[in-house]
Length: 305
Ligand SMILES: [Zn+2]
Image (cartoon, rainbow, N blue to C red; front, side, top):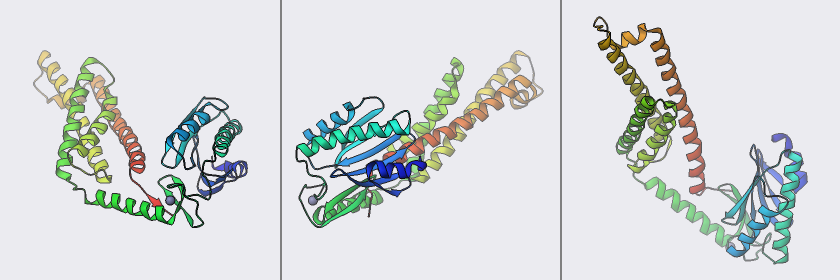
């Protein structure tokens, strides 16, 4: 939606900070807005009690119309998502919702611009930092407090022991469970390829559970184990069938693998399954990688100025 930069800036009075990332003051309150394929996602900052936040959430959701809209509490106000069928209708909807919330906040004298968003104090010495996805303005004291908190968390993560061997063992167990499920699904006649997605998920889950650190090495180890595990499982299942056919047909002149390769129907089914397993493993890795990346970003404090 890069083509909407100018329109978004004009409609809300914001400035584009990064690609599709907008920030600025909206009618007395700080607003961070992302324009994504899913629509508008943003953060409206204000200093208030939880009760006021919940009321603001209700107003945001129920104003204009409820469709394709969610809102929840954020550390400094509310976080929201909304969309419409066209850019124009989406923007009208967003503005309607924001205006209603801002009106409610203004009427109740809820502190916005000019105040620290962490302690609510009015101050002339405020600075804006970016905490994860949200721009927030703080006074010196709260800004320092936040920086040291971020440092602390980073130190904690860095100092966490990283046990590749145990992590890999965990991943093996996770992938092993998925391989068993693959065989069961196969014999039941279900689409066993989707198990590949499960293999990646379980591999990751047990890798971390067993003491491996969630980083890119984990992604590579789990991806490799899932791929090898599933391809071997698939191969063994076909070898088993070939063995059974060879026994019933009294064939002893070739190996089960040669039998698979000589039978056109079996060969094509085998090739198809091997390829599909690989494809679905890649899909699993991509899903897992993008979802944990998002989760890690939300859990880990990042600060930038
Ligand atoms: Zn403060």
